[in-house]
Image (cartoon, rainbow, N blue to C red; front, top):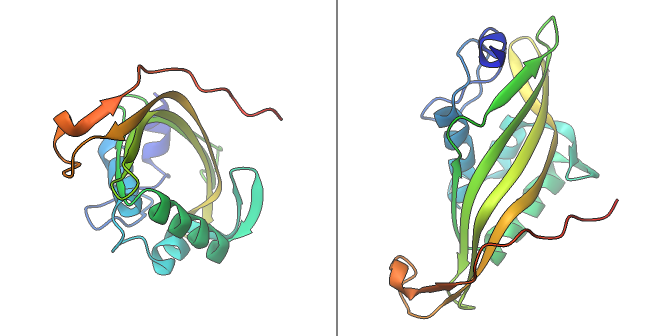
Length: 179
């Protein structure tokens, strides 16, 4: 039912990873959004400007879109290998009556690695967005998230793509940051 509410007004990610306002939101469309941030070539300042408002509450800090991009660059350097997948069936959307503001939450499976350092991490994060817009253009005004399940990994071989080269801890529940 919540997806039907969003269908008339929320964002849509096409294969070219662009926002729209008329198509229904699907897990696959959010997967496309996260694919932008998993690919260094597509994670550009222009992509940030396209998806994000000029001022963003980004994980509890007020930032410009340029500062959001710098944070994403830092993440790309820390974790040059990144895979993100929206957990199927977890996208929940609630929009205002006039559809100019939408709250979106989802669960995101992630795998990140830094082969040069021989480390990796995998787990699940709960991510939430506040989108607002006018004239059919929705932009992220707030993004927040917390890792809810995590496994730390050591890469024991040169090829990170070989699952046998990963030595991971059991999954654990990370401590939530205190307010």
